[in-house]
Structure formats: C-alpha cells, structure tokens
Length: 294
Image (cartoon, rainbow, N blue to C red; front, side):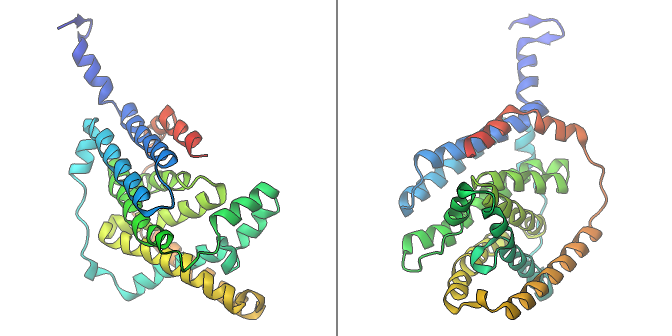
C-alpha cells in the first residue's frame, strides 16, 4: 500500500470518494445520465420510453450507491404516514394548488404566465406550443406515457431517490433542490418553472406520505389537469367567458395562497446550511446537467 503524508493513498482516495462535494457530484452525474438516456433512447413509443426510464433508474441507483453518504441516506429514509391519514381538506388543498398552477401556466386553462412568455419572441411561442400542446385523446401510447409511466418513474427518480438522498441536509433543502432537478429535466424555461412548482408540492407530500401518495397525485395531475380539462376548456370555449374565468381564477388563487401560507407557517424553523448549498453550487456535474437539459 502506498503511504503518503497524513495517511495511506487508499485512505486519501476513500476520503475523496465519500466526501460531501462528491456526494452532490454523484447525484449530478446520475442526472446527466438520465438526460443522455432520454436524448438517445426515449421516444413517444411506449416500449422505448419505458426502457429509457428503467435504464435511467438503474444507473441513478448505481451512481448514488457509490457514495457512502448517499447509501446511508437512502437506507435510513424516515418512515411515512399511512394514506388513511390524508384528510379530505388536505387533498382538496393539493388540488387547489395544482389548479392554481394550471391556470397560471396552461394556455388552455387561461395560462397567464404562458401568454406573457409568448410576448418575448417566436422561440418562446414555440416553447409554449410544444410543451402545452393540446393532448390527443385517441393517442393511447402517448397518453399511457404521460398519465402512467412518466408519473411513476419521475416520482421514483426525483422524490424516492434524489429527495431522499438530500433530506439529511434538511427538508426545505431536499424539496427545493430535487424540484430544481425535476424542473431542469423538462428542458424548457416555461415548462421547467411549472414542473419546479409542482415538484415543491409533490416533495412536500412525499415527506409525509411517500411514493404511495405522490405517484397517484402526479398521475391525477397529468390525467385531469394536463389532459381532460384541457380538452374540456378548449371544446366548451370557457376561455371566452370572462366572468366564469375571473371567478374561477380568483377562487383558485385565494385558496392556493391560503393553503401555502398555512403550510409554511406550520413548518419548523431551521437554519440555512450555507456550506451545503455551496457544495451543491460548486459541483460541476449539476451545471453540466443543466447544460445537457437545455
């Protein structure tokens, strides 16, 4: 064994491999593989999309497990509450937040931010049109991907693995950082922002109830808000009825703000771990992940 000042070479190497900096670098590397897998394999074909998701999940688990900090975090994930603990009021609150986000972003459900975003130029118009295209209810393959496969694997990847790997640094940090990764994965500013905000909700729900709650909630979001209501709003011309629109939007905004305010005020106050945030920002793989996604 090679001896070097301050310890053996193996000891030094192990210290680097299991360091906090590489802790986040491994996560970023896994995210890069996730994006590259989709860029080369995933298509609108159900089988290829499923293969891409499975490969990305296996690689993500493998890379995370290389670092002992990640292994410890994933093995000692906090226990979650039973689904029976979810009250009707709590569930309606989640729906209110999702509805509010849909009215902000989805052009078929008013889409305030999407309309403003389109004013920035032709490329932005194309982004909004591409990521909020009216779903074709006869395209069973695409519907299966959007409503079933994607919610399952995205929750496993971004909540079950990434959020769990970072929750040791605090719930706020893990929810926000995993939501940023979730938003970046969508490859567009407007869609990424929407996904980030949805990720904050899904992450909050995950911390309490786990994947058994977030997967159905994610599915419901894609099925009800991203598919069925888009077609209902478009076909019925609700967008042209300004009175109904104003009332519905006002109700959703008020309800969502109330829910978010109550949630934030009930959270335990925790100190911001600036050192951990610095390690995350200095990890090159996270920046490469953003580059590959965009």
